Length: 222
Length: 252
Image 1: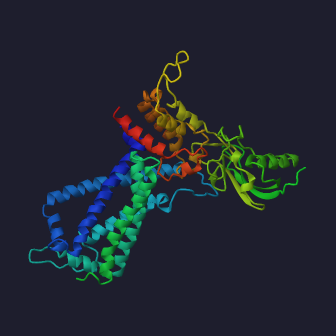
Image 2: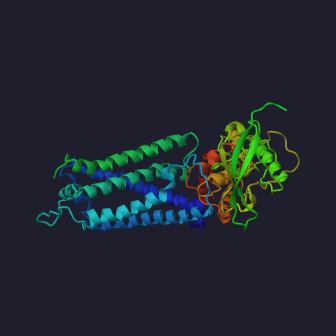
Image 3: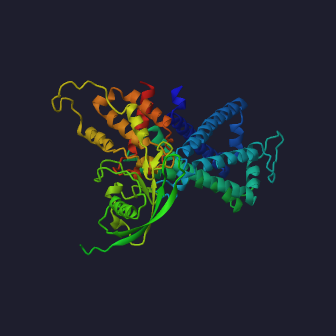
């Protein structure tokens, strides 16, 4: 199909899958905040409800895997093509509009992939050592104790904060890029979209780092 | 003889005999340059000195020298056309430089623009994109009455803004990916906005964008370096418009 091989078509697929991932990241953060106990039973109850019906969990995981695969696959393919667009670099290059974030999307993206693998080994597969895995009589893991004990480790917290800096960089370019690629943009909206995209990325960053930081600082205790 | 103060500058210029030559930088001294010289006139002065010394002059493209032909293709200190807002190399004046400055001069660098010699590149790829759909094929017949097709003023203005593109290729030269999206989008938008161009809009955007990639240009990653480099200030809103046109074309 021509759409899937075209320059703009592949970028549109990257934009749409990117949007799905941003929405996931937003919902994931709202879910994470249950660690502060604003729903009865806190994060333990939230985790329990999420996994209550395994087929839904697995369908969701399969869809997420497909989205991530399309996003990263096209990202790598387009980046390789783009590097080929200028085989010989300039001796001097004065960057006028591009940003650190926009020029390093492939690297922030690949770092996030590494982080996602680590994150799943940590809290999904639970194979990263150094955290308490307390189970109740029914064999359910105490998620709250697992997270709090996990983030009390400096290196673990550090990895998460560093990953969220990477996420901020990726989204500060990615969100505004979505609107431009999908065509929902013009000269009046562009400056607003760039600022709003960065703001959303910043809110997500602050929301996510608050959890390891409040735990590591001892504000949120087990 | 006027009593203008003159400057002496160091030029580090890309010299390349032909497309197969690896090319290298050569250093020259530009003497007796006044602030009133345009950048191209400065190179003329340097070339006269080179010719008098029996050396081969620096080969560069130029034509109108009034900022409208789009021939001068030089990346000056890393910025296409020297980085002054909405300025071609011929309209860039030496008053923007100081005595003793060192200036790097390179050709447009992109896979789609092979170097012919020194600072001259082959921009046939841009012509190929235009040939793929940058026209309308409606019958014009005899001279039509003025305003027989009414076009709202804002639409006419927008189409004219897109039509400001002079096809110089600075957008490609400035783009980290060597993409020609701003160039292509300017023509796609200009024609898609007007009634005569709407008829073939769907086929046009598909053909022009696929030709763009076949010619070896990269893909857009929304850095907006192209707009900064454009001597005519063509706006990246036209890239967004082309993306909309591309989506519309999928349902046409």
